[in-house]
Amino acid sequence: NELHLYCDFLYEDLFTTLEKEMPLSMLKCADYLRLQSYDTQHKTSYCPMILTYLEQDCNATHAANALYLHRNTIRKAVAFAEEQLGIHLADPKVKQSLLLSKKINDYLATK
Image (cartoon, rainbow, N blue to C red; front, side):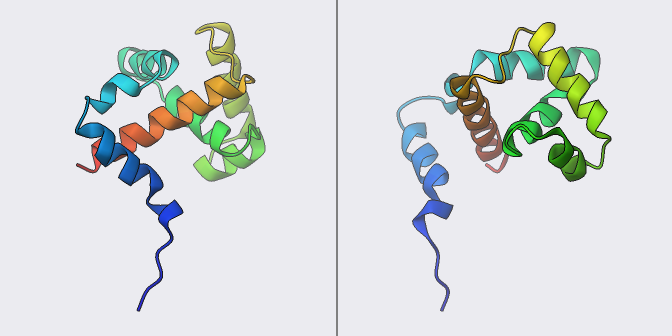
């Protein structure tokens, strides 16, 4: 006797359907791949910091609390991504693409 809302399974349903047509990894945006690549090469964790920052509506304090970090650490990661990697986090399309790429990555990780 449980109630499940479709909105809770929207992305899973979408990805399951899309996966039949094409590899989902093709949908990850270039900025997300660049962040992941940088983290892998330099053994950093900018990608999770940036994504948490975006999930927290670009609030460094809330992101820092969620990750148990100091807010200046988040702010430095944001500045690094914008200045060094050229990722425009203020652009809503970039934010949407990065968050969708994270959802795809999370979905693929559960398989």
